[in-house]
Length: 42
Image (cartoon, rainbow, N blue to C red):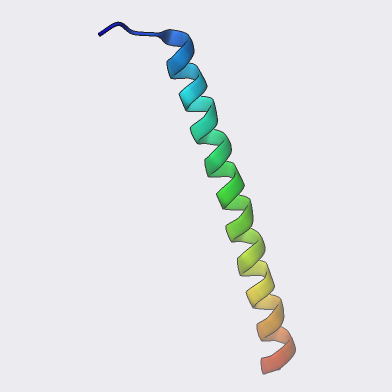
């Protein structure tokens, strides 16, 4: 088994992009829930 630096780096970049994408979706979801709570509960 050989160490392929370029493949490891590409896997790392893809993992990071996926993490950032889902973090943004999660943040937008939480903001939407808080806005809806402010509208309907206040």
